[in-house]
Length: 114
Length: 115
View 1 (cartoon, helix red, strand yellow):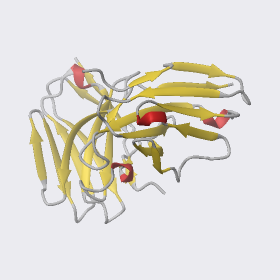
View 2: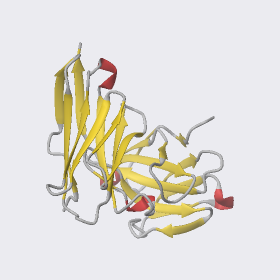
View 3: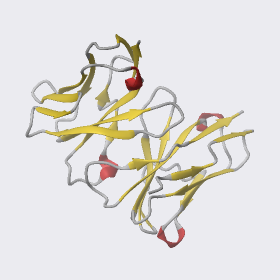
View 4: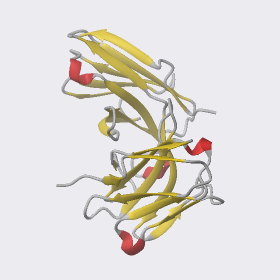
């Protein structure tokens, strides 16, 4: 069974440019999460989806970040415009139910803003 | 203010010896704790968990100990193997039935097991 798939794996952009990350969760997983992991820190939640509904986006910087999960399957996270401080690894995770013992993470997208 | 702390950024251990990774938390509402393992260029993968009703949970070479009064937990790996070299994240949650988005991750400890 395929795991959580993210693309691209790496992205280098100049500041003020837009960027988008894509995530395809494990089949049948209704819950999808986007995390940001800064260097030397643990993952921090940006947004959680239940099917196509964003149920917790309190940590998402809404002035420049947006996300969508059309049809409740794959999801896109966008930053526009990117800032130097957005350089981080962006992780997508999914789980079958919103609670429970674990979520399954993708490999992440490493973003470098120069 | 970090609610989950891993005060050792890195740890080196000889192959075959015990690795002990420590984690402290500040929020007394945390009731469920997880350890994740992360290899370079991969996402974190679940390793082991423990509920606050227990003080120990064992899975093969991995054992997690919880001292709730001290708000401290530790992960023991015995014997350590070179393939255990990875970053280990401690995470805490208000409960196993709580929404996963309430899970708070620590900053991680990078373990190197030397052959």
